[in-house]
Image 1 (cartoon, rainbow, N blue to C red):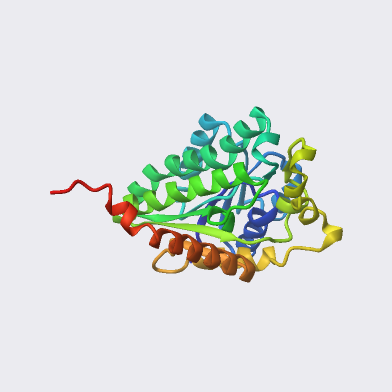
Image 2 (cartoon, rainbow, N blue to C red):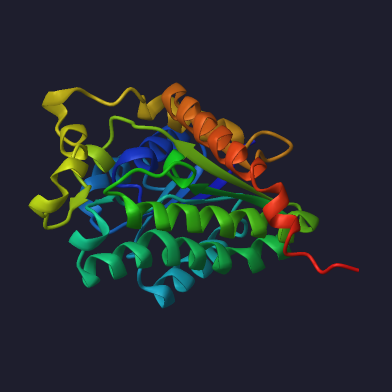
Length: 275
C-alpha cells in the first residue's frame, strides 16, 4: 500500500535518495527544497507523485504553512522526515555569531518546528511516523564540531521526549544516526569557519572534507533504503545507527560515559537529604 511522505531538504543527500526511491516504488512525496532546479528531473518524471515545495526551514511561519498545506492537499501524511540540515566545522572560538545562529535555526529550531507543526495533524489522523535525521554525532562529540554536535545532541533529546508524549496517539518517532556517507553533506554543503592558527591541531576535519584524501564509507542509497524500511516496522525504533564505524564509535563512547558515571556513586549519594 502506497504512503505519502513529507521530507525536508530533498535536493541532495539522504533526502534526494529517499525521494527517488520512494517515487520509484509508487509513493507520494511532498519534498521541500530551496532550489527547484536541483530536482527538476524528478518533477518532470513524476509530475503527480512529486509535490515539490520551496522552503527554508529557518522560516518558522513558512514551515507551518508548508506542513498544513501538505496535510490538507493529500488528506493524510503517513511519514514526516526532518532531513534538512548541514555541517559546520570550526572550534567554538572560530565561529561567528551569525554562523552559530544559522546552524541552530536550521538543524535544531527548524526540525523542532517541523515536528511540532505535524503533530496535531498526525494525532487527528490517528497515527503516523516521524523520522528525524540526526548523526552519530548526536552521541559522539569531536573537536571543531561543537555547534553541529549541539544541534544534534539537542534534537535527539527533543525527539526522545516527544516519542514518549505521542506514543499514545499511534505516532512513532525514530532518530536516525548515520555515519560518514558519500553525500553533499560532506563534499559540498559543509561550511567551515574562519580558522585560527591557534587551533590548527583540531583541524583534521579538513582532510575528511577533501574527497581526494579518501571517501566516506557510507552508501547513501543503502542508508536511504534502510530509513524507508524502518517506516514499515510495526514498532518504530527510537534510534537507528547506519554505518559500522558509526556504531563502533557510539558504543565505545557510551561505554566510556557509563564507566565514568559508575565512579560517581558515592559522590551522587552524598548530596541526598539524610532522613
